[in-house]
Image (cartoon, rainbow, N blue to C red; front, top):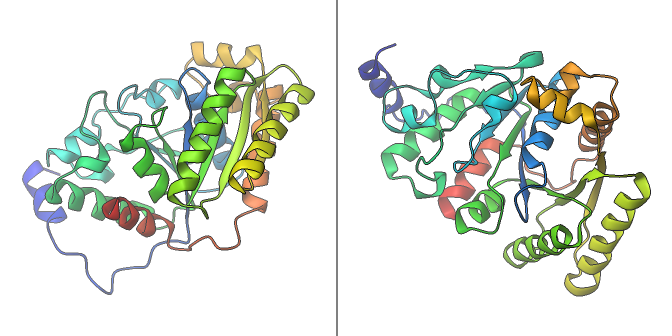
Length: 287
């Protein structure tokens, strides 16, 4: 498909009788600070869901450190930057990973999704609407921290997974992120996941500390996704540019990711909207 043909395709108006979106869930995965292994968590959850037969799309929205493609050992020819320039449509940049998981790759330093002009926004919205047909899960790997661009993504997503480590500084930053989200949307479901825990007791203590603080000071109930243990298999998998779920399926980390995805699948929030991807883009535009 040529760039010109692509432009002609994406500038057509969205038909009112277009095929409805699949009942998908949109989950933003974030952290209060960097260095907590967030991207490894995104990869583990995505591959575990896909391995279980779910249809998963991952959007790499960490534009400062876009590296999900490296983590999966993929070599995308095009990225979101090509879509924003009108050179490609979104279907042309998607790369398929293990178990049929699909990745929408970003590139470092590109324009934030929250700062698009109307033409760029139309390209992405229409592209994701097409891609979302048949998709059950859209996972968004955000940048770390409380920058406004990250916050808007969190507010637009249906649910948020907050990744922390057991270290006190990481837990303090995680609580600050919970407070920020709660102030803007008290109903937003937040899942807490402790990464790189030495044992179950350490993880559970960290989870309870955060949950108690959130309930005491914010009146906010936080959902627990448990923990991913400190596991040397994760580093080995990163070095070989494969997901730990794929390369070491019997490892403690893989077992943890399986438990996490089972929890997510079994315990969807009762009031979650069914038109997840459509709602996400509407929320992003409102933001």
